[in-house]
Length: 171
Image (cartoon, rainbow, N blue to C red; front, side):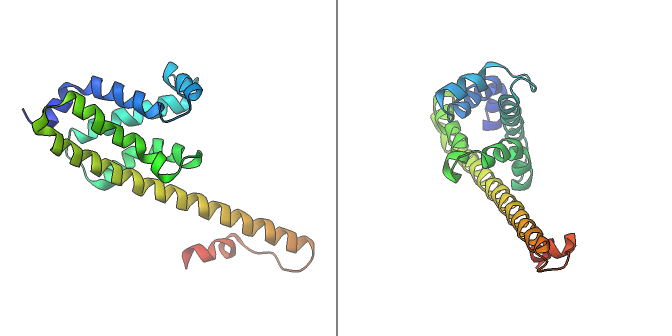
């Protein structure tokens, strides 16, 4: 049996264990809350995390490329990018799949599965860095606005347009 067929067959087990490993990257009390309810309104982070893991797992059982994988990882990575995770901590949940694979797959498939997990990790890291860059640009633009408004109130500069403030982004 091929790897993707086995992954499809054992999907529920993989997704359940991967979700648990992912929420375990949070502090114990937070992990208990995230794992309790999958209702999007009562537990939005837990629900988004579970949906993303399920979507990514469905994707890896089909044909995919890095761009599609990054898009699938986006919701959970975006959340982790605004939390106090380092880059390594933010994508560490992906590597939990290797341990899960070792427990659920034959030895003959482990190497192939590990390569698949490495692709997911690279996509997660790329998405994390893109999110951090967006956050940095938002903060820089807001700082420019605040400083400019202070100078305007002091009568030191003329009014700038939105294009003027975002002009350095286009350069």
